[in-house]
Image (cartoon, rainbow, N blue to C red):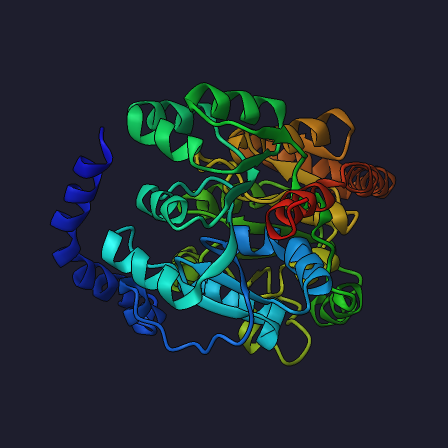
Length: 420
């Protein structure tokens, strides 16, 4: 596919974009906020040269945290701009960084909108987090001599196959990047096969996303509300269809007074998961309404709050990381390892392939495949506190040993801002 054909297709879809925003706003009203930015219209005032990072949603925004902090420290005479695609990503950047940075939506990948974006912010360098290839954006940055990097880059075999079908479009886009910082050797090889140049393997920056300083303390406070002496199983970042598997698994364990916390990955699914709990007649309470100790008869807590994932991990004994029981690719298992918790993951972890394999190999995580094996794992760990501690220690050690990506990415950015 040529970029002309790609752009024509996007123009044909352009009239549908207001309806798409409206449709998504039915579950997340925030989609109707700042909608002008998606077409390249911005009101933010620019006072300093701009260093720009694009972080699509929550995962990329959290992953960028150590990099943003390093940039704030290294470049006080610059403004840091984070662009997002989803309201939850934007909300996460606000929670993490407040008014220390600027935030906006990246516009649709159409030349007129991209040009408005570039003209307004005039970034001195841009960083695309993970695998965000917007081909008109990349091309316009090249035309206007804005160096653009791909950082913490990952590319699954499935995604590589999809990009390969685009042929020339993918090749030209990757070749227009000034540098690519890949997570693993496999990611680097796939990107190079598609046309990427100047590729380095730097590791996964998510190993360096440290918990908030008060996460352990707030976790202890939450644990008091949940029940200090109750065993607690946390199912975090769950996706569609996984909650039913988790409920089936928990129904088969024999653990007195077990309390299960379920935290859906996307806030627009809170009501859906609550309806499932109610439909099954399970006694539950909502985290958002939890002001006093959990009732003794309560068996489930619905984690319907934002920005508390590290706190949930700190409060739990055993943690399942969702998105992995079904074919979603897995969510971030590094976060509970940072909190020294034993981790359970499903079979589908291609989004965190190397981290998952390392965690399993070093005894920090166990794989489960269905409700039956999940129930067995929960039961085994609940009966073995020493094994819980050993798994948690292995995870924390793995995180400590896997750092260095932020420093490597900072060197690449510095080469563009202050070339020798």
